[in-house]
Length: 335
Ligand code: AMP
Ligand code: MN
Ligand code: MN
Image (tube, rainbow, N blue to C red; front, top):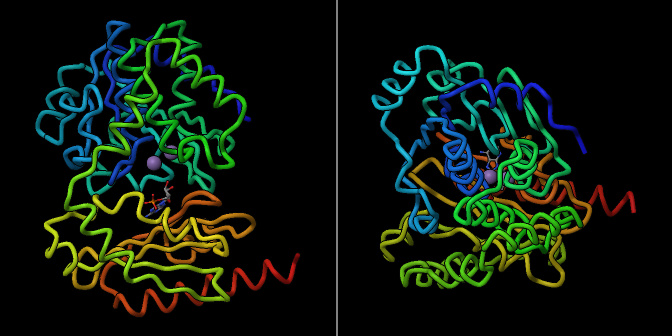
């Protein structure tokens, strides 16, 4: 476990304006950390700009404070200008500068830039960084920052941090869940978070379109490598026929992953005729972050992904399945 750099605390104390940012297609950890930290900084009298490239997806619009996020680059520029140099930015849950999205150059120019992240294979960027792949989530790291600042989070910021931890640990199921994670979660409950409310809004709050899409996506299930490798796929035709968006597919990968024999699960998501993204989940020894890196992506040992453009979907599927089979065979040989 790494220690939080003193510099981060000094910078947070000394600065009055913050621009918070996270990775594109933000998940529960990205949004929960960003919204949780934003409110905490405001409770210290700071001004905060919650920047997102796209509006918050339907799945997360219940998060307290998500209406305060902005995708407006003009507003962002005005905020930075009005700070007269008394400004810093904080990138949360972002494994490399690329993942900040299409406005990365503009965002990277807001300095000093603090980076708080827990991705394995993190590629350093920014001026001060605290990166710890041993942490379950960025939410857990933000909680430690808050403790160090001697701030007692409000119930709403505690709720956001709880959502961050719950989503990145798969409801405290994955191996990234430590006794420390549980202790922090317990403290968040003591601050007034109701677990059934958080998980109800996360997992019992879906649209009918999503369920219809799931029917079609699960029907594509294919098994390879003696049933150790399971793949499902989502096409743009399916999205259109259900009136759903790619975001509605969040969590689908847990179904192929849940099969007894499966060691690696893959979800292929088409977003355009020749563009898409891929999610991978591993159980046990297979390192999907390493495989994702071969395709220009990254992530964690057990959860990784990549995006592609100008490529044939069928070719990407064939290449990835081959790479995963090779990785599984290599692991089997080492056992
Ligand atoms: P996802 O399957 O989209 O939930 O992604 C799982 C994990 O893979 C994320 O937490 C990221 O760390 C990582 N990841 C996904 N997509 C990319 C990408 N395009 N580049 C780098 N890392 C990614
Ligand atoms: Mn994330
Ligand atoms: Mn995360």
